[in-house]
Image 1 (cartoon, rainbow, N blue to C red):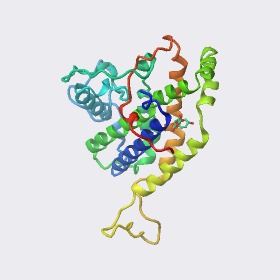
Image 2: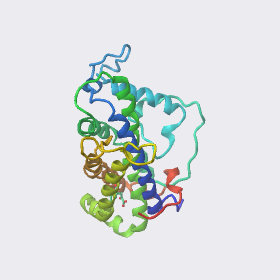
Image 3: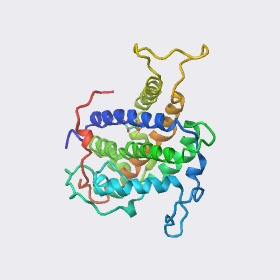
Length: 281
Ligand SMILES: O=C(O)C(=O)C[C@]1(C(=O)O)C=C[C@@H](O)C=C1
């Protein structure tokens, strides 16, 4: 339990999750924006009219994916959050009981509707080439891993927040009791770490996005320009700076504001990856 809540171990998991997010972006960027995928009713799915609400093809694919993953208990894990949490299927595997780590308030925190909206409106238009190449199914199925990786990373804020609370319990308790969200935000913010995150993801995107020749060298630049990259490093840096870290901090603040509601007794569960050994960053 103590290693699960070591800030170094949690940060190490966040670093590894960067790779998942960047590779997800690289995969999705192969296809055009394909706006109809995100427009409710633009691509009708027979039999998919749920409670009179209009759904996009992406929502259909996302919900169907969660039906399968939920059946093998993906969403019983404390570091996984469904986009359709009210629609989860019966499980075919028995539930796992996780060691308690988070406060019980964690169970009710899920900002996936906001993550979905931001992904569709603010990330996809910069990530993809404009236009329509007709690859609707491929686009939607590649959006799903991007959304799942972003959701996991952002909700990891719960573990970061618990670690920070345990390290500075008196300071956080005073701010929580005063309902001082701005004060909590200031106390949990580490600007130097944020600067390093942004620079690292920019470099990772520039490295992972290159074509490598059989000699191991990056493919020659075309027309005297720099190497053609599969995803724009500045875009990835901006997504982290303007979206991923602010939303992670939002989760941290929500969690901390509720942290004392149940008397502070930890009854949540363990983030499996956070228990791994971690280099400092
Ligand atoms: O590493 C931390 O201390 C975190 O709280 C995580 C994180 C991030 O999202 O990467 C968020 C807030 C901090 O200012 C720095 C980094």
